[in-house]
Image (cartoon, rainbow, N blue to C red; front, side, top):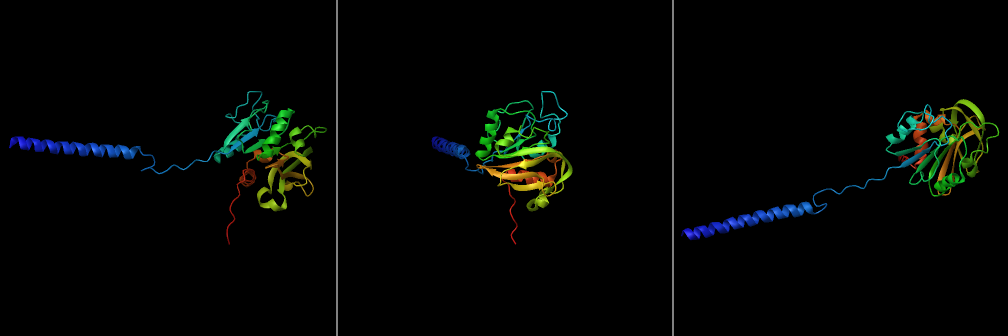
Length: 257
């Protein structure tokens, strides 16, 4: 009788142990299967990369820094615009004054060329051409141009652009199609765009016949040119947002009636 009870108890204990082992195995197996009880992770879109070429800046972007080294982490007049880009979640690369362009444009969606002081090597000019031709967006900014220096900007020249003269004005005014976006934007000092492609869409002007900002397609990309850097340094929400939405190909949806 005692032996039967002992055998019966042993069987029950073995059954309990087997059940516990099976339960542990099932829990482990379920937790090991990917995505069984966890929500699938959404793929994160890569950050838009914007490169600011201030390598030929005459002083407007990097002031008051100088001489080298130039540090994008320290305050300079371009800091506010760079902070605006970062606030939109974009990756920002600032090329310091005096640096040579090599592969900095690779992976960028937008390049901002700030002013033009000095000369570019032909390989750098070619890099700009290839960047836009393959689908990049370029904001080409030139400030005032001294006499006999109109042909010095080899980057602008290869795209059929020529900036000329020294013009002072408080603000610039939008072309008709962009009146609500670029009107009354700070200008201060710059030049007039006297040569540009026939396909150019005027964006802003000083008076009726002095173009200071326009846009055209080149290859698979686009170019926006602007003849005053101060319009960028004084970050205005409407102007800045509309301009870089255009360069980033971000277009707000039209409301349905």
